Length: 224
Image (cartoon, rainbow, N blue to C red; front, side):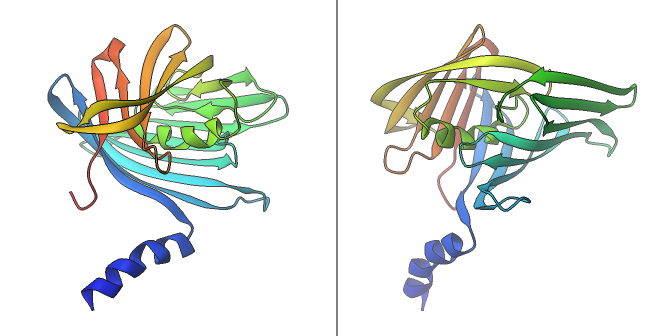
């Protein structure tokens, strides 16, 4: 019975709308500083338009991280919720984002009160978090539109940046110490350079490098 069950597992996941799920390990240099688990589902949003829902949770630096996002078919954020909680159970800060008429509203609620910022946006921007790196799992859907330049919102800092992507094609790069051939994308995010690697077979997110912070995020093999 084990064989048939293994064969049916991907099919059942697809029927449930799950298009990707995984575990990410976050390293600063060679030191592991956190992990995240995430699940990306495809299906109708609240207004019945096709889209994606991403749910992620993790921990890093004494903080528990919960992140959820509703995105359109191109990976643009309709709304997001990012909650950071101290290990002792006290909420550090809650970030909420929502697309409005010509603006994307970002609110931050913490012990010192609430602050809000409206960012110009003619369409839903990509939301790339510096706390929940699983947010990069939506990036391939943005690239599917053929756009090499698009708008990004960073939830934690409530800033709007222009992102530019250059596809470098296939290259060999280590993933958890094992060489792999992946699709490399150079991502210019404002003034900062980042590199994203995707699986060439299905364009799933595999690896991220943030040189300015000496951070590398890598997807763990299934079952790890």
